[in-house]
Length: 442
Image (cartoon, rainbow, N blue to C red):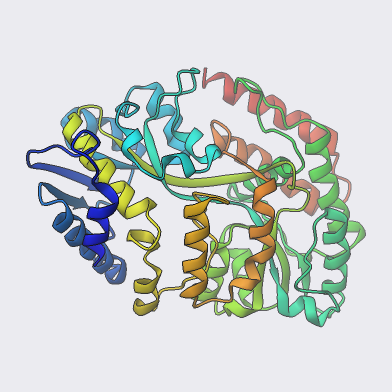
């Protein structure tokens, strides 16, 4: 039935039919590896269903790991081994477009039926930055940062898990109550090492309405009222409130391990943090909730995601066939990645509010209804996060993101480890280093 549905959805008149009449084979990147048998099984079933609906198209998946490697990307293009439909992180898209390493699909992408329902801020990732409105790819995943919190600890501290903090003042108040539960309890945890501190600085800066870099990307912009507020807030929580614990210089897995251990109240993170805490750090889905980053309503949230672009040497027939595959596998409610009935049968978690490709539109509402129908996790725990999305704009990481994050790790670690840290000087020093980094990008 999956294949029959695709025939109905994808084929109109002969003039509208996007795929070529003759046989065409496309190679597609980021096929799930055999080491992930459930996702591999789902992929292969989808390929079979797609090819049954489109017998003139053959899909050859490529499961190279990692799915995209910037160090070998150019060599694969030059050597002719880059996939026809290749996987890409949002953060690499702009550079790929500028270097003309992807095909312009503007004249073909109109065949993708849900195109106009996709979130405009998500599709803008795959647009040329020259006012031409040219399109170079389609999204597969999209998320933005939120505030992950321990609902169980909220209840123990006399807080309402259904009404999580919306401002940083409310975060401070909640964190103090959680820390007061006893030794070892941490109200709010924060990263400050391994580039993760700078990453969270950016998330909290965006939520306050600030920017990491200037509009042209040539100079740092975080030495601002918003940037100062991020550091001042953390410094006050750490030293005045004593709600962040004494152990600092935390990075990547540290906060998730603390969350899984049941003594961390809140942290910044995307909804998939809850999945990691459940799967890898002995937490339980029902104990956690997610809401928007405080004060991001009306502002921006640091976002990320991935998608697919097309080999610049791909023929029109391959591009048309690739678009049909992407529409089916990545963009159709109830099919491909959104086949939640199958995911539930496989024992995979269903109910996380990502990817959010459509927002409040017909396909988005259909996807959310399917998530609810087949949910294996408590979706009500994500309601505050979902409810806020209509008032938040996705904002991508800055250019030279990891280098800038490393610079801002210094400022984040300073305010969390030194009571006398000079915030103005920290931001001035970081700005000077960041400007030198950004100057190399122009």
